[in-house]
Image (cartoon, rainbow, N blue to C red; front, side, top):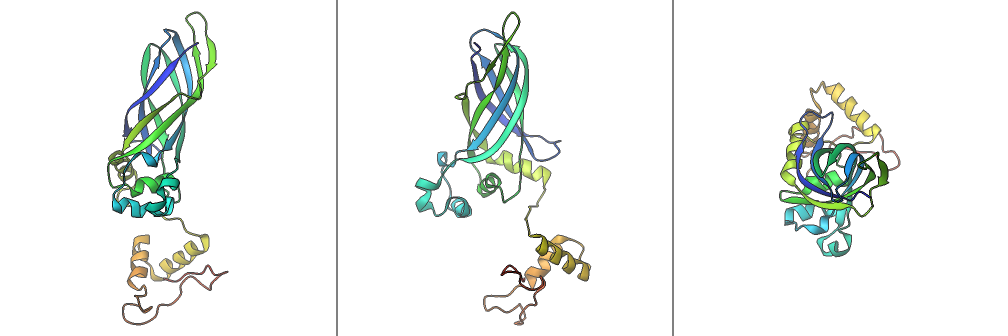
Length: 235
């Protein structure tokens, strides 16, 4: 029976992917001396937030994920990062290969929110392996990869930041309800504003101050239409 061990030796951004992608460098060893014909490999990646320390600014940004730092003894639970799969070509002894992992900058996704909150250092990951290995010196046999095969890796935060900057330079994303987006589109069209940044800048410039009045002391008008079930909005 083939016995495989896995380790992750590095990571880098994929510069030419259809979307944000990280390439994790995997080293795979077969320790029983058998020839491996191929591996249908699956990998589940988890973030293990309890395995690093956080600066005060990071802790503040992580509040909506884990609550107040005083509760982190019970709330720092693993976060799902990614599922990835790969067909590994045949080898004898050991081999290295890149595992592509598609990422997201959608701030509604917990993993992206976590990475966005980190100023530096490393993000602790756990890689859990499964799949099927085809091995044998004469002919081949198919065997499942045991569920206990795993390895830890610390992802440098700068690599994540570099990847996001390559795909979304100096930008970020917000998800809005459709009625809010429609109202913003109407606002933009009525004023012939050239970009969404200009829309937001104009709305922010007229936002109410602490007293509820706009910059000139006047209240602001609602542009989102009437309140619908308490969900209308106004700048």
